[in-house]
Length: 348
Image (tube, rainbow, N blue to C red; front, side, top):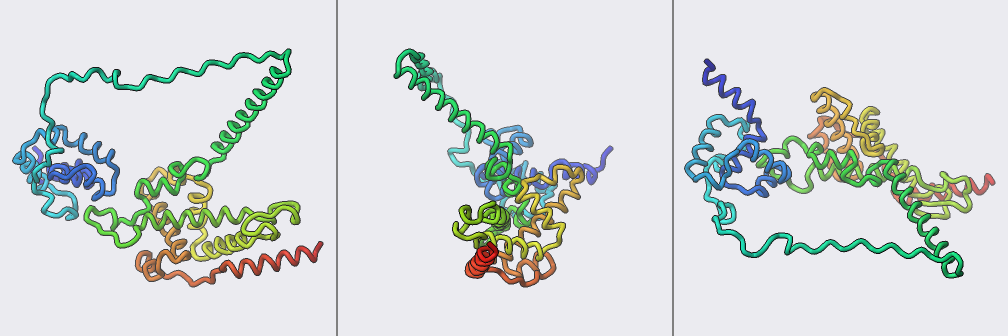
């Protein structure tokens, strides 16, 4: 026979904090959208948890039945005090949340009668006559069009195989994936009643990661990447042998690397620039949590470099202060670019 204390422990383990919190909010009368805002989860995730753990639809329960269920959850609460007592009181459902009234059969006709007909497939073009001049021109035009479409398809396939956030779309990159699942957020901001002042931590870190990605991309462009320094030059100024933006990007990446340990920079480089899901190969959940923490810390270093986060806030969050580094601005980078161009011109 299991004691009451052991039964409560088993119940707490089964529910979990997230499931418990969403169940309480749903039984109290909140809508799916409101719960999604409070919990920071998607509407689909909220619906899945509600349907799995509350098999009886809420609109079929009376207010007394919902209050009994809330009282039972309050006795075995596992939310660590995150929920206020007001959420353990059943509220009246709005008219839109109540069960729809039964009605007779529809007399408006079938669904197919309201659907637009599928457009017919275009008829194939007639084969041109190769014996005439116009026919030969049409054959040549069709061949050129086929080669053009084949070239576009080949370029799109190569772009997909190359990978990277810009080629696969923002939803496919590692940085945006961490943002979408909430891993970039601080644990304190994941509380149901947490209030965020200003930009949230996950939005700040996502923006810092995109800036770092831009710097790393900027290091790869410029006239120095070309064989001919006279005719080829890209970046901020096409006539310069070494573009000012490239120099600025190189200095920014070097400074950011000096502000963090090498292991953190190599990790954030693989996530932001090389678009690797480095945590997938780690079987231990505790080890993955260490990786996530290192990613958050490295992105905060970038945020401090870009003045998106104060040094005092960084020290309060991570327990140490960052060194002050000199930042090369646009004018300094342009002067160095002009000096490099003059040296190359004299060398020729």
